[in-house]
Amino acid sequence: MTKNRSGAENSGRKSIGRQRKLGRTAQYEDKETQDILNALHRAARRAHKVAHQHKTGVVVMEKGKVIEIEPDPEMYEEEK
Image (cartoon, rainbow, N blue to C red; front, side, top):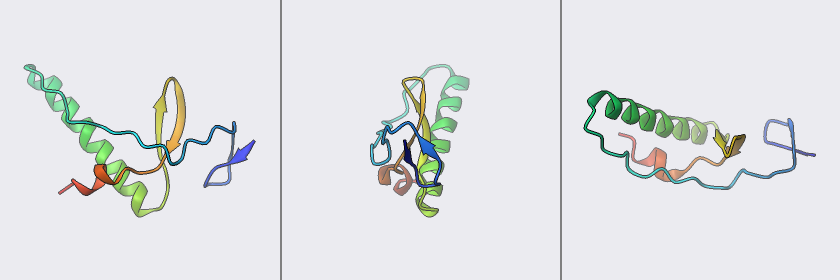
């Protein structure tokens, strides 16, 4: 077992440092669906920005497992 940044033990799978790229939000004809996807994208950008400010990782789910990744500069630098 290894310890993550907060000192908690994890299964040894080191996920910090792995970057995930979120591309442009898909375009949908349904306005409600488009608004939801846009809001999720804004929330993801904000989460990366806050994680960077506090020098922590971003917690995401990947392949059914919760992991911690490094904040992606491309996500928080484009926020206005």
